[in-house]
Length: 131
Image 1 (tube, rainbow, N blue to C red):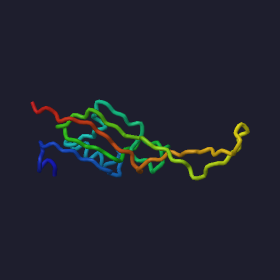
Image 2: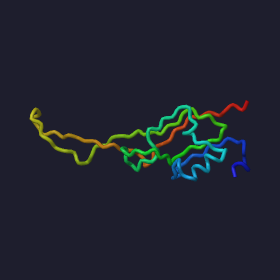
Image 3: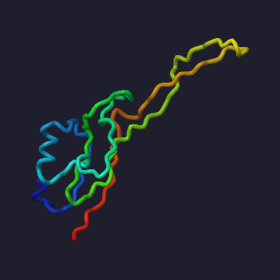
């Protein structure tokens, strides 16, 4: 349908597609000749993990189910999967005695947390010169 509506118009298609880069739906888009995966054509790529994490900061996968597709009218400068996390104190802090301290001290332990079950995808792009 994109060919009919605006074959030469710039387009960016993003989202959680729930299929990775090996799925036939993904291949239908990338083999269409209209859209390219920003990950595949980026000049600089930072993706140490896939995009789905299931709220587990230790989860590793090469599967990317969140995609950014662009028409050839865009030059992809950078692509990144942002895997930042934050720390939260565990609820089950331990109490411990340390003989060098006059009182009991609390040894706090922290757990890694992430705000979503998907890592954000960042793309820096520029419009290609039409000349």
